[in-house]
Length: 398
Image 1 (tube, rainbow, N blue to C red):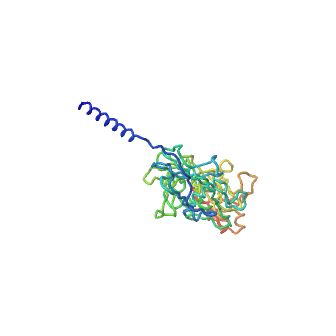
Image 2 (cartoon, one colour):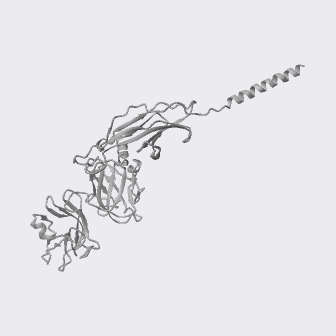
């Protein structure tokens, strides 16, 4: 009888122990409960200017989402141009209770919405961007809570004709990838501030061939003592960089040009965070976007139109460009003149055209006194920077 009682006690103990195990393995299933909403107050409108692009635009805040059980929660800030599911994009995510966006972020969204500050275009300068919050558990789980969309009004003050605003008046580039510059400061490539947060300039580029000849970087001034910006500087800031550029992965992590040698318009857009290469074009204000020169004095052109020397407008009434010149030796081989387009039917400007206008012309040029009174180059054969300044009325060679 004693043994039977002992068995009963043991059996009861095992049953109780098993019950404890079952209770310990009960799983808690997260389920959304309650609402999710922003806890910060929004402005009636957000004024966006490049000058304030680094400033805080809005700090989105919220209280913890309730999933009826202790669990890790991820929050996504989403934006939409329509306020519907059709174009929702995730802006940022966090496990905390706030996400901050800058004026620069809002400027990008405004650009995507088709807003601009030009009073001459049909595009509006005011528009609405929608934001909402999503809370979820696990790896992008379907167990989530969504807030309602909130509509924020973005305003780009219309341009009143004031000067463009950038962090610097110009950026410069030197390096063996800059054809006529190399690693020196005699002729650095210049990229002017041509719009709010927009630098651009025409530049001759030489591609990488296995040495250092495709590499360069940007500087804030003309000298080694100024701050410089290499490839990782822009990549780390989230820039989309033209595929013709890669990280040189040299000692300075320079840019490396891997495209086709030639003249390009290089644009650095701080608002949309892009660096692009396109066809060269005027970046200043002149009577003509480009002046062209042909003649035997233009080494690579001659009296034909396959490869005229271009001089792009890159300032207020200033045309300039590098050109290979061949000197006069007693024949017609030092002569040339300027044209307003690429063909004989365009207006042309000879030596007397400029002297009659009161220009001071570089001493390496004289009147050819041929049938067209062309320019005649009497200097040393070589590559020069030729500048026509229609404001100060000078034609110079450097």
